[in-house]
Structures are given as structure tokens and as C-alpha cells.
Picture 1 (cartoon, rainbow, N blue to C red):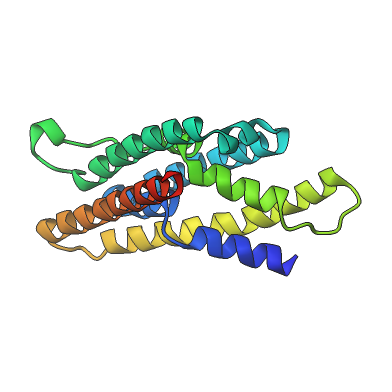
Picture 2: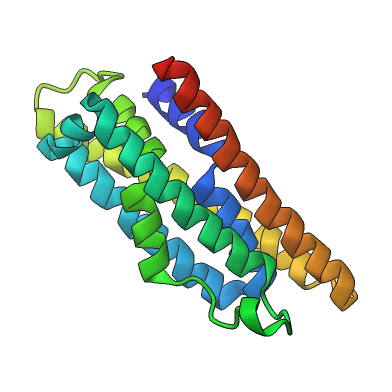
Length: 200
């Protein structure tokens, strides 16, 4: 059980679309919108877990074409969220972003996120815990995963909000927003490179 928990902890601790966008929403928009966003991510990641448990995700993971389509859609959506974070509070009319990403945005991100399917498939299908009942084992795994997932995402949200609360000059705050957004773009680039490498 400790091996399972440790593996999941390491998988989600590393910067990915969920945690980076959480920190970015916290930095750009504050705690309350950030908490709503985390709630949406929570619903989304558990929906993906249900898809894995019921076998729907097996189709996604097995098909290179579906994985590619999901990657393109998730990359485009992540870049859209990055733009909202980068230009939060900007006075430039055509990039003005007042509304923070919310529950719907987070749900959509998780639904399109290939990493969410791979992580959930790895954790639920792998790492047997020795339970006689499949459903009992799945329930325990979901409890462990959520017990780790929730505090890590709120830790990233706290980090983002802490940056916002430093009462920095507007220009500095904008630079931080740009840096958060850029880090999300880098994740998209690394994921694209990984996808090309695995199919090449």
C-alpha cells in the first residue's frame, strides 16, 4: 500500500497541467476562484478514474489516433487557460480576461488530458494491493489517491495565492502571470515532444 501511495504521490507532485493551472489561477485570480477550479479538477480526475474502472479509458489508451486527438484538444485548451492566466487583469481589450477559469474549465481539461487517463490506468490496473474483492481494492485505491491528490492541489493553489498576496507592483504581478502561463506552455511542448518520440 505504501508503494502504491508513493508512486501516486510522485506521479502527481511533478508539474503537470492540473497543478500548474491551479497555481496559475490562484496567482491570477485568488483563492475562491482557485478553490472552485480545484473542485472542478477533482470531479474531472474522478470521472476519468470511473472511465478507467469501467473500461472506457482502455479504448483511449489503446488507440494512438484517439490519444493524438485528445492531446491536440487538451494542448489547445491548456494554451487557452494559459492565455487567461497570462492576461488576467490586462487592459488590452482583445486579450482582457476578467472571468477566472471555473469548474467547467477544469472538468474539460481533465476530460481531454491524456496524462489523467494514463496515470489513473497505471494506478488502478497496476500495483495490486492483495484484496480478494476487486471492488474493495478499487475503493481503497480511490481513497488513497484522493487523500493525496486533494492536499497537493491545494498546496499548489496556496503557492499561487501566496504570490498574489505579496502585494507586488502591477508590472511584477503581470510578469508572474506570464511566467505561470509560460510554464504551462512548456508542459504542452514537453508533452508534444514525448508524443512525437513515442510514435516515431
